[in-house]
Structures are given as structure tokens and as C-alpha cells.
Length: 474
Image 1: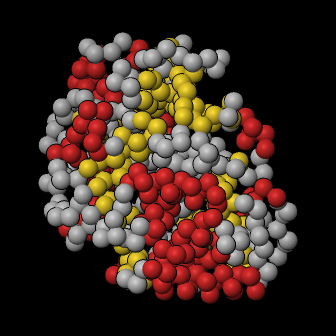
Image 2: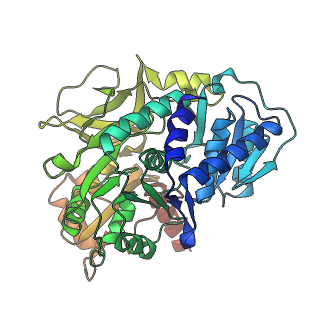
């Protein structure tokens, strides 16, 4: 028995109640989930599934999807979670990248390729291959080790402190590390997991009203909770926020909307095992706008372009060192080596150490917009625009420009009933930042664009601008 299954199996064996609830109230007890996983693992072994063999798992946020993941691990394989609704081309790309010959869709085993699986000793100790969203290029397969994932779950058990009487609602996709670890942690804690197949504000509100005590969400999802009066949430005691920046304004609004719920703002990457920093509920009000402090066994550096540490308060790249990091990128040893500097993973995020001792993310290295030779961090402009009393949220990005190289554009969502214009907002911004940082164009929209993972999609800013240019051409 591996380190991950030895952690999960006893917890499920003890759970006779409804461990996981899915759509339309479908539920499965812990012991039943374990029995299904064991039967499915035997079927995989009968099909010749070997140690370290990647198996594609079609994930639809169904209770049976967790049984499928566990079945792969019990069989000694490596689970490759893919959205059940993934397009054929996407599935083919992942199959080609992994060489997987078997797939699981619920309790059904599929033969998806006849060629032998490539021999890879690097997958023998792996549990997951999680493909990144690929917003900046071709998706990369992040290989996460079974021992590392088990160790991280034990750390998170001490950090999050889920209780057996908790009802944990998860609208996050289980194809991403945030949704995966919250779901596994819930099972380990003996709590009840409520999976949403797709996030909708109405369904999420209903789950809160029905007695959810813990919610794991993206800030984008939280934003929908304060557009109208907050829903009743009689048992809500904890909100786990992660996956993208929780802005100070939104954090304060959520705190006012759900005063009985502690907010944990979590920061981490798939490559580092997730949850590397946490702004805990006890310090949330004082530290809002930061990612807090490193979690257990995590250390960090903030360095300049030459790799030298920057002074406190100065911005630099955030590097993270953790024993729970990835084993590497799938079949990409050079890329894996390039991402590590003296044992620290290069996150690509720019950060600074605040005077209060907390770390604050100020942007992405690749997101920097160079406008006429001036470098601008979109996150800085987003934070400024969000302080306007009639702006709910903002998303900024660079757009190619023949004269300046790039120009800064912003998509802005306003408070209900606001009649603020783009010109008025630009004038307001011009009194607070340097002229070259004022967005060249502002688009007023009801909502900010999101990608397939539910996170804000910065690439949509340029797509909107370029589409408008094409429409305006004679």
C-alpha cells in the first residue's frame, strides 16, 4: 500500500455515513466509495495496468470520480484528471502526451490506445499528472508524487482543521489541484463532501442555505455572492479562497456578508503542491491584501533578475522551497531543471515583503506590459481601479500597438446601479498614478471574463480589444 492510499483507505473504512454527495442528491458512503474503488482497481490490474502507468480519469465532479482516482492509486497507477466535457482534440493531446492506453469514466474502463505505455521510471512514485491551463502556451503536465501529496494533506489537515461534522461544498473542478486536495482532505477528516458539477450562483447559494459549513471557492465565485444581498448561511464557519488574488475590497465585502465565517486566503502553485502561503482567519482583517505567511515546511525568497535577494518592501520574483513540490514536468527534464534555482521553484510571480512581515503578490513577470519603454504591472492598475467606490473589480492586460509596442487596456465591472463612464474612470485614475500607467482604453462590462478553470482570464482583455479593432475597420 502506498503512502497516499494508506492515508485515505482507513478514513473511508471508518466512514459509514454519506461521504460524498453529488448532483440531484446522489450520495455515496465512505465504505461504499472504498469498495467501488477496490473493485475498479482489480479490474484495472486485470487489464494489465502496471506500476506508474498513467490512466486518464474523466472528471465530472461526480462521487464516482473520487472512486476512480482512488482505484488508480490502489492499482499503483498515476491518475491523469481530465474534464468529462473536454473536447476530442484536448483529450487526444493529453493521451498523446501521457501515452495512456486506459481511461476511466465513472466506473467504466475504456481502452483509448493500443500502443504500449512509454517506460518512465519518473512516474513510479507519482500519484497525479495535472495539466496546467496553458494560458501562456502549451499545457504542461505537472507530475505530483504520492508521498509528497500525502505529506501535504497531513499539513493541510493541521492547517485547515476540518471536523467530522463539517459539510464542505466544492464547486471547484476536480481536474485542478485546489479541488483535488480539498476533496481528499474532506474524506480524510470524515466530513461530508458536496460536489457541484458546475458553479452557478443560485446552486451555491442553495448549498449555503442548506447547511454547508465550509466552502472552497475562487474569488470570482465569491464575487457573485455580494452582487445581491448575501444568502442565508446558518452553518458557514469557514471560507477557503484560492486560485487567484482575493482583492482587499472583495475580502472586506465577504467578511461583512458572512461575519461568522473565517476566511483563509490561500496561495500556491500546482508545481509546489499548492497552499504554500496562508492568510489565516485570525489575521485576515489586519493582513488583507497579502498572502500571509508560509505554511508548514515552506520557505521562500524574493529575488531580483540576477537572483540576489531584494530589500524588504522591494518587488522581485517569489521563489518557493518545499518538500511537497512536483517530481517534475512530464517528459521535460530541461524545463524542470530551468524552473528550479538552488532548490527553490521560480513561481513567475512578483512579490514584496511588507512592513507587517506578510508577503504580498504584486504581479506576474510575464504579465508585465511595456508601454513606450515603461514597464507596468497589470495587477497594480487592477488594485487601483478596484479602490474606486463604484468599481467592483477590474482586469487589465497589454494589447499590441504599432506606435507604443503595447498599450494598457482594462475591463471593469461596476457596482449595481452605477453610471460611471470609462472616461470618468480614466480621469479619476489620472489623479492617482503616473500618466503612462492610466489605461488607454476601459471597457465597462457586467462581469469579468473567466477561463475554463473559473479563474479570471487576462488574455480576454487583448482578445476583446483586437475584436473591437477588427469591427471598426472600414
